[in-house]
Length: 145
Picture 1 (cartoon, one colour):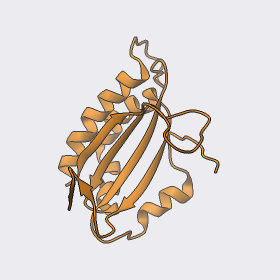
Picture 2 (tube, rainbow, N blue to C red; picture 1 turned 90 degrees about the vertical axis):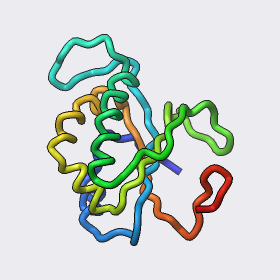
Picture 3 (cartoon, helix red, strand yellow; picture 1 turned 45 degrees about the horizontal axis):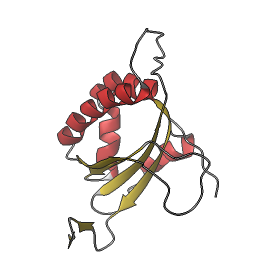
Picture 4 (cartoon, rainbow, N blue to C red; picture 1 turned 120 degrees about the vertical axis):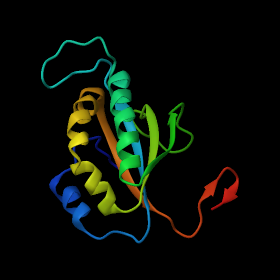
């Protein structure tokens, strides 16, 4: 299996947002790889690490998620690879819930997203976003929900 970390979706991925999607909420699994030092496209000087720049973005995203009916669900550091092989591990895993694919698209088009996205681009070396949907059972805290 080959993979490619990206910061922005390609044309086909963007078009996928326009499709109706599964019924009910979607959960976006984000595998995040940070730059050692934040690099802002406008050339501003900063002492922030990529992780710190992305954290600024994350704070803003949490507010936008709530505004659009979503919520952050989970975030954790990647500590090791338990099974399989990859050349390089991601730094962090984050999961966010959106009420629908349309709600996620609305959030992406929110003017507030444009304001905070500079920190995302400055901090990320790349990522994988994996859309998932509830399939009849989700384990949370030892309970099926």
